[in-house]
Amino acid sequence: MRRAPLFFVITTFRIMAAVCILTRAAGTQTRSRHSQDVGQAAGAVLMHRALHLDVSPALASMREPDITAVLADCEGAPCGTSPGVSADDSDAAQEQSREEAIPPPIQPPTLSPAGIAVEQTSQGARPAVPLLESFDGLGAGFEGPQGTTNFRNPSDNSLAVGPNHIMQIVNSRIAIYSKRSEKYGESGTVLYGAVATKSVWSGFGGACEARNNGDAVVRYDQLAERWLIVMPIFSRIGPGEFPGDIGLASDKPVPPGQLAKSGEASTPGAAAALPANPPQPPSPPERGQKPPEKKEGVWAMCYAVSAGPDPLGTYYRYAFERTLFPDYPRPAVWTDGYYTPTSTGDDVIQKHACIADRAKMLAGQPATEQCIVIDGVNFLNNADIDGRKLPPPGAPNIMMATGGTQLKKIFDDDGIYYWKVHVDWKNPANTKVDGPVKINVAPYHYLCNGQLSSCVPQPGTERRLDVQGDKIMQRLVYRKVGGRESIVAAHSVATQGGGGVRWYEFRLDKKHDPVLYQQGTYAPEGFYRWMPSIAMDKKGDIGIGYSFGGLPNFTGQRFAARQAGDPKGQLTLHETVLAKGEASQTNTLRWEDYTTTAMDPSDDCTFWYVGDYMKEGDKAYRTRIGSFRLPNCKGGR
Picture 1 (cartoon, rainbow, N blue to C red):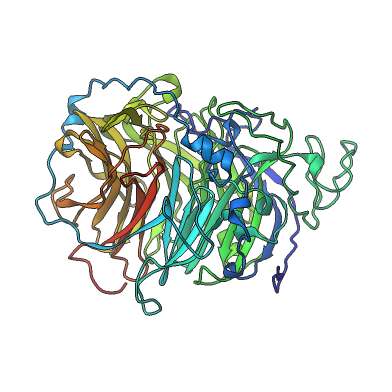
Picture 2: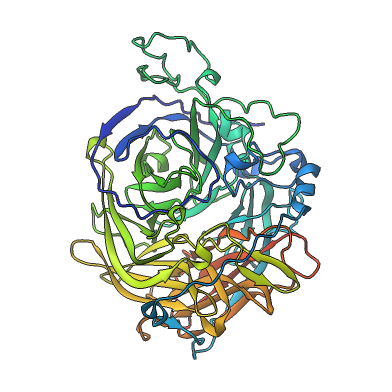
């Protein structure tokens, strides 16, 4: 394979500084079934070195020669409940087809009258948002230049849109499509894929190239006109796997580029590439059986930032060590960094808020990542900028989470909690997280008591679907409209007779504190609407895509919206059907881990959404990508 024309090797270092933050026991279990020894103090700011960086060849040239031979690095319980392993080999395909035992359904809760009061029980009277584009993406029936591929449940459906392209990542596979523009006459032509997500790091060396982990996420950085791809490494990289002398006395510095063990001092110097993937066991463990894990070593987060607006071009590639398990990454674009919170374990109520040095990464320069351990919190989302209007200089990033604690069987709350995150790249000791602060909202009960539960009924089967009802879903969107700053968020809540989408618009005051402006629970006809993804266009209109189901309906995907200035708390436009389900999923309760709504940077009006559905005769899910534009939003930026 052709090597990159440029190659950077960066200096490495480790800085640790302590800052104090307030924490609150408002958390829940992570969706990962991974457990670990937690040895990092809450509130500590950890400066993670880049283990390796380079500039890639053009992505279009990095193609798996035989996609059916690619095995994912991590399977089973230690990879989280959504390992994103593709069913490309026959064993995995057989496992995908085997049906799990059917657990009993979750009993409906008793709801608060104040929560019921914000339910919208009928669809909006305005005409439905027109469906502009609609085509199948990765999943059953997919065909592209690199062939076909199969997928395992649940999908992690990530989507990003640029001026001429659409990029989709589902678990451990990636594809790039044309977008109707001056360059392409139509949307949906597969230009690249399906390939293993690790292909983005071909030639990079180490774990990012060798380990095809799932949970990868793509964002389009509209401010810089770049693509950001983030892929976690789910299995430990032991100290002994790094080259060099590892039998050092505790007072002897580790050679440059080598991982320091506990009690050893690290030394700046050239970074070593992450090690090759360890040998695979002769046969995979039975489903649910936890294979042996290393007790020492670190995990990693792999970043790729495009060198320009073409997603098929070159990328600046980075690998940062992570001292905690990096499950369920939710990257967000902010002016001073790429914010990527993750979850750390199923038996600890703990999250990991990390920020990568965006300015350095956009230039392909040596960069660092700062991480803060936060105990007693739910799944975190950082504000992700849409549009080109910036927050005030120095404004902190707003981070939010729902309340409740699924591990403690606390499924109700009446608050959304926020933190202000300030990062200082010159002096990490000044990096801090202030919060949490409670925003009073209408009471809510987690839909189906949270995650990994038997919930949404389907026709012709006792199998019910999981809803991920314990968390704010991605994305948490920041939008500046005129001089007003808004943040919109959504999650799934129990409603009278089913489940609905609870959504919020918060507005930032002069202190840059979010204040509730409006809220609603969209729950017409007593069916189930869940796993939402929300966004706001440049006019202040709000659009939400979500899964729709409940007897007698097969599960599909829909979209509802409101115009700025409409009555508060109401989605005033009739919902649009993006994909009508035609079959029930019977092999597992896992449906999706999330969906994605992304804004089109060409006009800042067009919403793009992706979610799962099944056609008649399907044994596995397929994905549907669609676009929508409200009638009052037109023109350029």
